[in-house]
Image 1 (cartoon, rainbow, N blue to C red):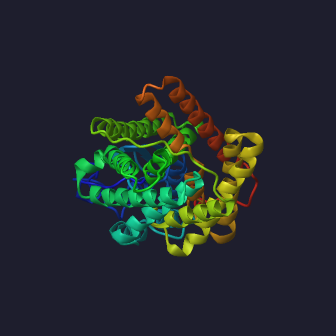
Image 2 (image 1 turned 135 degrees about the vertical axis):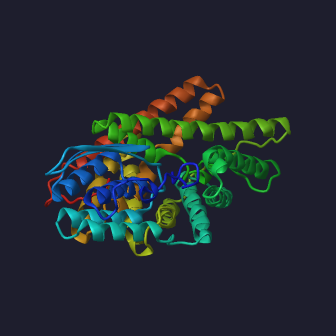
Image 3 (image 1 turned 120 degrees about the horizontal axis):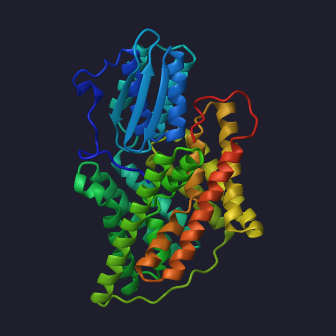
Length: 427
């Protein structure tokens, strides 16, 4: 899920810390580069590989350890003693445009075509650049993604309308959380409570014939930490134990907050006599599901701060992920379907990177939003809250299996022999 920068989680700029290395110096530049890559969404294993390449290109030995809330780096200069730096960082929003520009800087450094002074100047320009999209577009994007995901879950047109409305409300809360620290820390619970109570009210008063579970899960889809969960498992698989464990714990915390908000809304509905009849999900035309996939893929562009000119990669990734899972899942089951989907999305990302010099994250992230088990994890925690122990544990096991399948597929796709690897292969 995107995370907001706010005054409680925002860390101080290195420029404002006494006796910190100047940004024009090689060490100062490398420290700021690592912090920027971390803030814009690069996972631990990619960040460490990138920093190793940049430091070696500038003549420094380095040992780098990236964690969700800190980066530890030891620099070994050619003519001095080794020095260790610890940077306090906060998980920032996934910002693909800033990540693309920052990885371009890293690649230029590795190729020896950029000095630390010029690189530091470019990093500052990137950090000070404004958002690509106004708040109204971001809110509309949340709404479009929620409506598209509803169709993927076989929701009706009425479900899509309710989910789109919930998605817009979640988008408003997200934008508000950027300047309100307390809301930022309770955002999952507040959004889950609001989404559930809105769906229950609409169903109770007969405004819409709503499948409440589908509308709520679709409306909250951007907040579900399925991507975080998958990255955590990938970090564990690549031996980044501390970072992977911390990220896994963070994902579970968000799941619990979401389940708490929904459970509280359900209980409030019972207290006030809000009752709604259970509406069953019915089959929908397959062509409309494809439209939903396309809607979700395009809607993710503003949420990840990508350029609209890259919409073709978002659309292609989402369609590839869904197509693979849909057909392979019918034959192999959900787990192996996710495995095949991860392989196809990973291979697509690598070929697009080679042929068009597009960062792999531009392709991987939209595909993984379709693939990741966020909705299943949410239902698992919600079932446990409702004391459905067996159902909750079954869903939890399903989450783990699908997550492992995704990571295995991703790692297998990275073994495909292609031309010389580039640092721009994010994710």
